Amino acid sequence: MDLLQNLCLTTINCRRTLMKILGISCGRRMSNSEILVKEALMGAEEIGAEVELIRLNDLQIKPCTGCNACVVSLLEKCGSGDCVIKNDDFGFIEEKIMECDGLILSSAIYEKSPSGLLKTLNDRMGPSHDIAFRMIAKKQREERGITTGKGPDERSFKPRVASLIAVGGE
Image 1 (cartoon, rainbow, N blue to C red):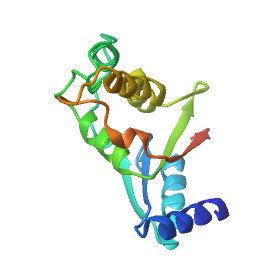
Image 2: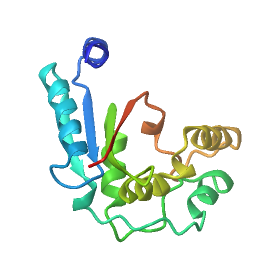
Image 3: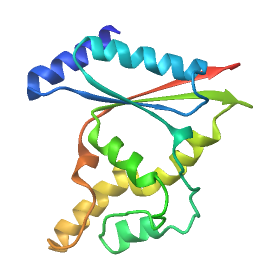
């Protein structure tokens, strides 16, 4: 907790704003992994962070189709890299991740892997959300003098702290 407290206090002092911590539970309601992410969020809240918990089980996130339209948009067309799947809750969770300063993911471990919910989210975040790809796209836009249209979300470049809580044997 000392590291989180130090980070929150440093951020608060530097930016004069609260640090936003997002907890994402990728398991069952009130499972061990959810209890642990709630404990972490309560600790962050005690030292002044703004916290939010999202249960992936409560959202509908469709699986990635592997079409690579996001990567083509980002790297070849110098666009935003947005996913072409629009009729689910991915945009909501993506926005919440972009807004946060710190991210805590919590998942049960099944068959030596995180839950399918976390894997689905990870696939949808995919290469189009990889900071290296977004930096290349930003540089390409600058080199080509592209100033119009939607490019990579600038919030992608914001420094964030991330943590994963993985619980076996739920």
